[in-house]
Length: 395
Image (cartoon, rainbow, N blue to C red; front, side, top):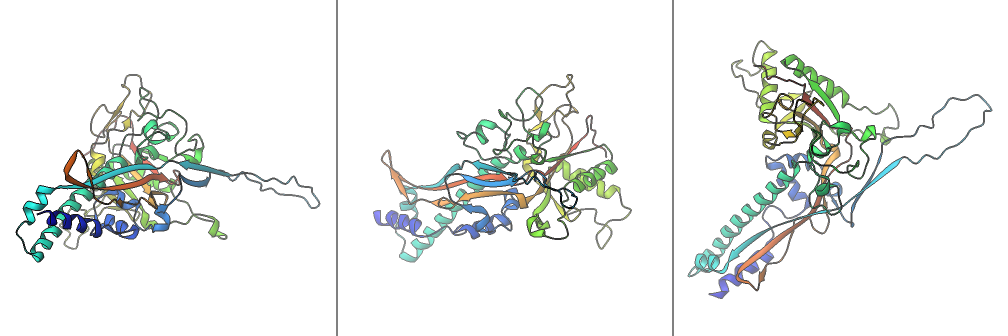
């Protein structure tokens, strides 16, 4: 009877995952799933998402420290050599998931079968184990993407969590999640985010505000969209950013998507389908950018009160709960060219060999180890559209 178990263990050790076999494959597979993390992997090759080293490092120029001047002929100059780069250095975050099976599970499902039938059963068991594993793993990564910002978890070298989206895109002072009790989100114990001081104006996300009417909502879209446009100069464009448009999108909750669709219907006199009778908007857009429904935004409690009004209790809430200082849809204007997951070259969804523990001799485990973090290369190109104080949803 032992041969069935040992053969299955060899099968698991020597047969790679059916849909996650390398850097390129995981990107493609993630695109097929309805998770927001696929947006941050789309169009990015291994050279952009895979790197080695003890830490994650990069540089950003937040101020050119201008040396431009006009002059008179024969004027003397005071030459300068400004240092303009801010280098950030981040720690890896480590995650693990696993598949496991018992001796009884394998032996009782394959005992008495012929070779071909037993091999087919192996494949069925393997498929079910992998399906559970990858669902669990990607759900864990997706949940982390919307975690409430917390300095000790995300910024500190002793932390265990990757950065979350609200850590980089929020509507707080200097767009930095602040300490609890001030009405701001999360707990951020120092004036640094991703090893850079957010007091620097160009290391802050943009914030727009909209009012109660559908016209004001669309006006808010217009205002924030224009604030996020950056065009390179007419020459020497290789020194300026010119990112692809298809990496940009707008993330919203169910409440936010419904409000935007209502605004579209409210500002036209006929429906857009060929029959002119279908009122649905299957893929709503703004300026060619998809509005992406993100289920986690329905329940995420990261929105602080929008004013310093002492009559409003400090704390956080979801879009649809709490006082009017908290209520109303938020719209995340995201440029995926500058936000991405980074994975370590030696621990990119690394599948370890099967193993047993002496205290559990009848259970076999196959861990999957992943070293990564979620980073932002430009906060200035990210935006958040928020409702004004005392917002009331119109119908």
